Image 1 (cartoon, rainbow, N blue to C red):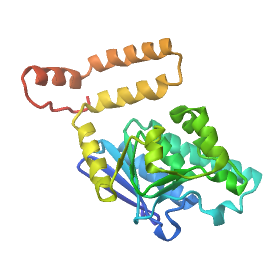
Image 2: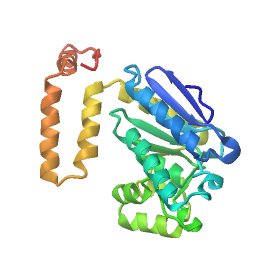
Image 3: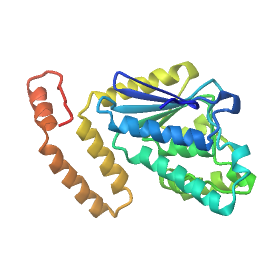
Length: 260
């Protein structure tokens, strides 16, 4: 597929997805979501891809929200379909079994903030600004922001950000747990790559199962989550990677994981 609104590259086990509409601050339109969908499917099905890094082109914005010119034309029926389709693509990112690192290099507003919430790990430039300003347009978050924000940062934070529509700084996002780390702008992408390489050094199946335990378990009562963890632990014990990992540790050498 030829991408018009994304830059999609793969190297050294990392799939890079860069939103590339800098003239409109990388705003999301239907075409961009469709291209993202295709890129995610490709990364999911490519065994050489172990981690995804998502960021924005230019120095001002990760994704500054939806394309307002397109959004203004939505009808009730089309608006619901617009929301459900975006939610389905974001759900794929969240559940594809490969970790994603969101390198927030500027504005992450509306759909941009919602996409960041969908990623496994979020890091931000000191210049980043995050928020859910949809109420200022007379609508509400439509790509999962009201749900993931409440689960990640708590109902109080979700209410404040979704009801006021105000932006917060990267440091405030760090304080409330919305992002994991804050870096100088020039250090952001190298930091994402360094984190990706730490993940890539580990067993692919172990990473996948750990993500599943967290993502599924957080929605369960603790006893059910513990049972899920134990079940996945048992499955991991049956893998070649487990035998290689333990053998390599005992032999004091780096493991050679194969994802089997």
